[in-house]
Length: 191
Ligand SMILES: [Zn+2]
Ligand SMILES: [Zn+2]
Image (cartoon, rainbow, N blue to C red; front, side, top):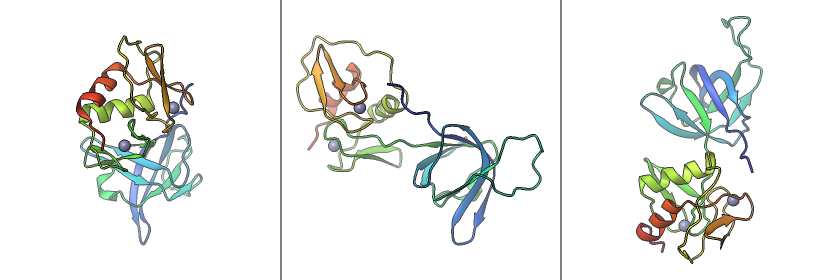
């Protein structure tokens, strides 16, 4: 299964809207956005996330070149307008589920946690979970090891099953990679 295209947005300008937070004007590079989506700001020195609380697909913006792509306005209350610069990119943050229990994980200060147990994942495993959700490998090597245990898909939280040397999600077809399995078993003792 090909995952849905990730929303990406190129910032042209940002400003504060009294009582609402920060509005950003820019253009959609890929995907779609809805109110409630969590967006990540990817700037040269900053990675922040905020829910998107307003989308205006046809804002009145003056001073743009007549042939520029259509402007879109988003309101992202948790971003500081001063921290967003022209050329920065916003991208959607898909939920990432805990592979050990299926609860949603969250990122706090660069560390990913299971929201049910509070267990924190190492940076390497956290990054690999995100990669498995956003950009899954075309194939995962089979293993001679019998992993055992209960596993949940990082992309949708579905219980996974072990067969033919792989731990596979019946919903989306993603498989946990061998390196992820090793590290989850060795380092991440889930309460
Ligand atoms: Zn968990
Ligand atoms: Zn899945």
